[in-house]
Image (cartoon, rainbow over all chains, first blue to last red; front, side):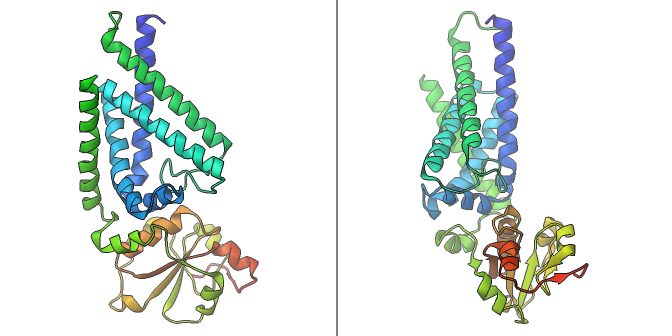
Length: 147
Length: 153
């Protein structure tokens, strides 16, 4: 891929993930108690940790989203975004394997339930997040960096 | 590589601080007062269909319907009050005898986000006896319990 196309793909992916994270954070920031319930429904962590996650995660998503949209600390934001998407994918996979009938809580209350398509969607997001991180990581070390 | 880890840690720590601040400023955030309730389980307190049915004539119990206005107009639990639009729940002010009031929230299936949002909003407003109807209005209809039809609030 030429430098110009590589730059465009990097920015499109960065902006896409940025806005997606900002959108995902909105409902959770407004109703943290409802989000805590969604987290606990996964039956991975207890009530106390669910509350901590419900307070921290929406702000984390919003901050990552802002960094990706603004193009500040892009490599770090892309790294954390890839880690986050992988974490979500693992969470969805374990819920799917255990046959838990829960809503994913991905975009706050009222999100779709865990199923095959949700699994596929998260696999795609994790893969795209890794591609973005590889691009951002290569940007600083490669001599072909554009612009 | 070291910069990557340091900046990532900074983002994670910064977001924790931001999360605590936004939660503190959020009128629907998690309060220390509610922490004890949350730690017993973050799930909303539920009431069974049978128990709710026995409370139908109880003057201290109010059924709150969080379904859409059109659905409420078709049929609802007798004596229920519509909480549509969902934002209306924020306008509710607890009466002085709020400890004695029992509020039973329901949607159609019993698992919708509107019930959970209304539950925590009412708890934050000072209502302590708030419950979500297990199975929702669908389970109520399944049991053949009475319903009221028509445009009554």
